[in-house]
Amino acid sequence: MASIGRFRSAIQFAAMPQMSVALRPKIDSGDIVCETLELQLLADDLGCCHYYGCIRAPQWALDRIFVAGVQGMNELIATLGSKPEAPETAFTLAPYSLTAHTQAPLEAGMAAVRYLSAIAHGIQLQLDARGTIQTIFLHGAGKDDFSQYGGALGHGLTFASSRAEVEAVLGAPDRGASPGRTLLGAHGGWLRYDHPTHSVHFSFDAAGGLALVTILTAEARPK
Image (cartoon, rainbow, N blue to C red; front, side, top):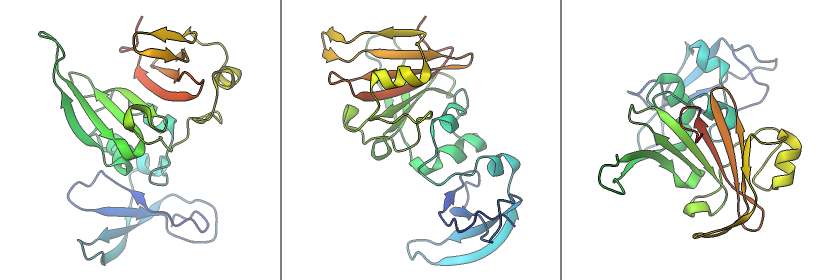
């Protein structure tokens, strides 16, 4: 049986669309032995539990166990280029309760843009014309009226990190801009780190605080 000490937080599992389920590691007293997970079927509005049992979880689920709502940027990066309904991607995105919406074309001849958003979780996904995840926006508190994204940004970085702290941890960026002013007002500049499959873009506000982290596919990044 799988065990993670006294760890009891529910793990949402979205690859079984016909039922509302929560997966919990089976509690024991040893180290992790991820072979089976306890399955708890959740009832309707009564909140009663109808069934407990054990199932063998798919290996990708065992490899990516996380506490609902606190998985980090690395798990989200893995969803780039996939469709939201793909089992592994749906598993990662399930805690956010994303809502789909479409932005109408801004000008004639432009395509509509499809988004999946969770304002309360500080996250927004932009889909490309194929319906795959192209860009992920992780917001700082109040950015575009979103709450702050609560997952890990990696390398010990947080939304309290300054530009200097990001560069101290990640090194010199591949692209960047100094603080300045545009028609939209003052800004704190930005840093972009390019990888073979994706880029990570850090945007700073006029006060120097980290305001937005954008993850995008290599195909989508500006040249």
